[in-house]
Length: 333
Image 1: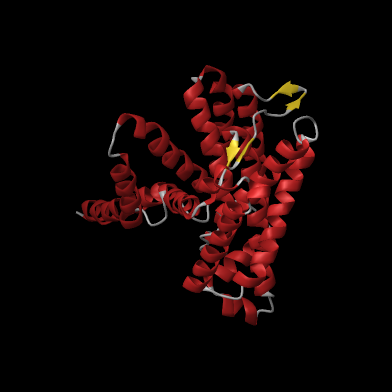
Image 2: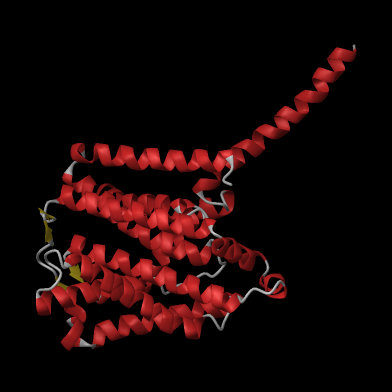
């Protein structure tokens, strides 16, 4: 049974998402594209949060699944003209499943390790994916990548940015809803138990390896979904989109917003995309601002931006407890 605070948080998130959908027609074209980028990277960050925030597995290979979903979509569109109509739904499913299958293969290797070894293995697997995209010229276009010149027409022409925004918004809401139900389920609770103490969960009879493996596959599948949407937004997918920097960005988005909150990753994505894409056009030293934001968050907000309300409540509590003796002493006198 969700607590009052949790229900209030859910209602607040729903209210913000609805307000965003209502305000979208009145937002300028550039800002609308930035919001779409933030929502897509928010999906990627939320998929990583299933591993980092709920299972306790820090991965540096999440960009690989974005790449698999994006390349599958681009190959279908450029080589076979598939996915530019109602078959876009099928290609979206294929891209998501292909990323999930890739994660299933990678997981057989990565889940054997823990801690920094898991981090390094996912990094190596992500770099292998990047190298494959870079070297397999006949399929991926190599360094030039693949251009998807047209967005699908599914009753409405998704070439219109506002229309495509609502598609991206819809998939973001769907992803958030599915992952929220997942982490609130007994399976999600078991992932949290593994994060806190895997040996104890193993003693209680849980198949911890299988739980971590399934979380790894689920995270990969939703990472592929973000890739399908990304290639239609950007119009191109190249090895530059799946380099280590993309995985690091996703990891930092989760840390910035708040691990173990899902929506925190999306908030982190909004902050990172705004600083990187908008502030960079106004200030030449925007990297320093982003670095200061990361450092300040790690030092003073270890629970991320989503942890601010809890820290404010903690600061008010000592004041309230100090007031109690004063009231009691004045009453006795």
